[in-house]
Length: 293
Image (cartoon, rainbow, N blue to C red):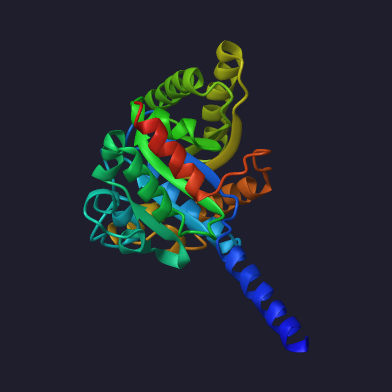
């Protein structure tokens, strides 16, 4: 009887461990978008990921910008494969995921994003199974393309939150408003945040953010949460030239401090109630949506 009891306890402990190993965390999916290109979206995404990682989160960045997939350039890593190779060339997800600076993970998307629209059910199931191997990701940052394409709207639709990045330039402000206006038609209940990049100072950033937020409230009856701004800092350009995130090279520079403040704001915000999603269900939704775009 004693031997049987010990065996049963050991069996139950092993079963519990095996069950727990298959359980994935709920994940917070934050997409970063912009109304126009050239506003520093990818640089912002990578450095924000590092700041969130330094605050104790497990963070992954998914490069979903078809036109300018360059997360690897900003992070200083060289991808050998991308999502396309997982879908069509029998690569495993661990073959394409890169170890980024300060412990963040990177998924190169590239042409694999466009290929999502041509997947059959078996391929979708296989892809979801591959992404299911990531069981410990707290935050997924999706660096999506600029503009109003179906790909951009698709990723917005399946994200918990969307950060709209703009600069104080009038054209950038106009394009940011245009993006929000179109996005609200696709995702009327979407949770949108605003960040002003390359601001001369806090005052200039506030003027730009107020223009957008007030116009959205007045004409679209939607509240946009202003997360903060990133100062126009010469350290950012220096870091880009060295293909290293400025949070790594210049952790105490003005831009890094701004990024830390934004990361603190994000961690202080409540996650969308009842999302109950893990990384597998997120990519299931992505694949399902893109197969119908």
